Image (tube, rainbow, N blue to C red; front, side, top):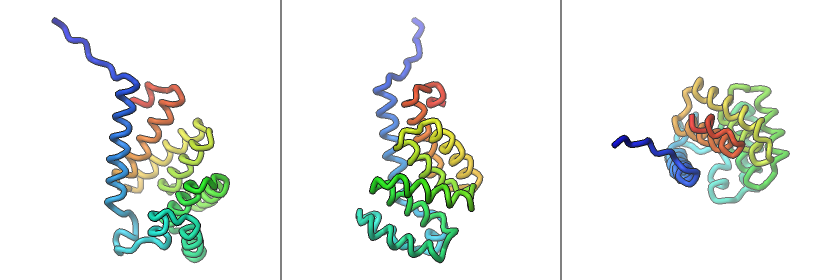
Length: 168
């Protein structure tokens, strides 16, 4: 008797994606990245962001970034705060402005891709996720960050009907 390989159904793929997302989120939450991990300090506003105090987080991060314009981790947190509050226009403008100065900032590029996904621009989001993955790999970012971008890319590809590319 010859066994035919079993193909995954959409339902199975969705559960796999959910489990991967949970694992990535736990890994990202467990560890910090960049300068703050080395100094054991959180960027200003990170604690407020974790507590859901978005407006306060935005104020603290904006003040911090006024004198630390190249702080990628703080920019990423500011973008996340804008996204969480539905301020997509402000988030996109801030991400694009930062990427003009630092086009290799994979974490910021990932957040831009998130904004594009949330605002229905899948084709642009796919391009940004691909660039984010390349930038994160070049920067030797944490594996969890690279995996998060890869997973989100696969989700957007899948929802755009590009299941073959998503499975790769």
